[in-house]
Length: 176
Image (cartoon, rainbow, N blue to C red; front, side, top):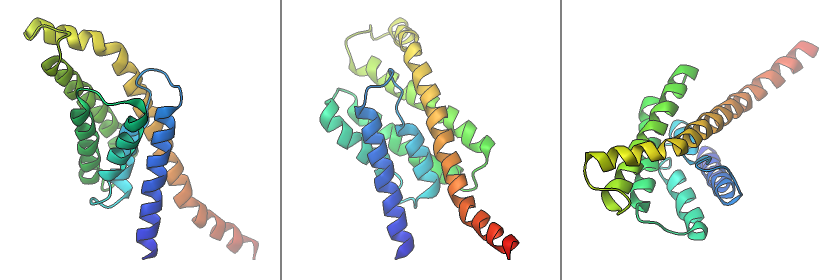
């Protein structure tokens, strides 16, 4: 019971942080949602993890507004959470780094393909698809940097939080 309460507390805190950071002014595509999906998928049970980015997106999109490819965007974050729950069962700095890069790239490819396929901004041929990806590259920079910064922050803070009780015991034992 205590473990489940802690897990739900972590999930709610992650959702709240993501919503706040999406609603506050920030550089283009500099948001913590993919990092929260990666982190949640790693530290939360598989039946909770996908709901964290979904809850964050649904709540913040109520205020920010809905858009044509909303289902694709939300699905990308759910898939990132599910993938991290599978591939980051034993997280290392290297695995988390690779997964962060792959998540950023996946989100970029999937959402921009959806913009091209569902929209009217680009011609529906190879040239239009290439143009769509080229014009989206500046936004990818923000996505990648934010994913790296927020993922490193979340995993780093979590590692410190796990080590704190052990350090406290070590200090107490040494002073006896």
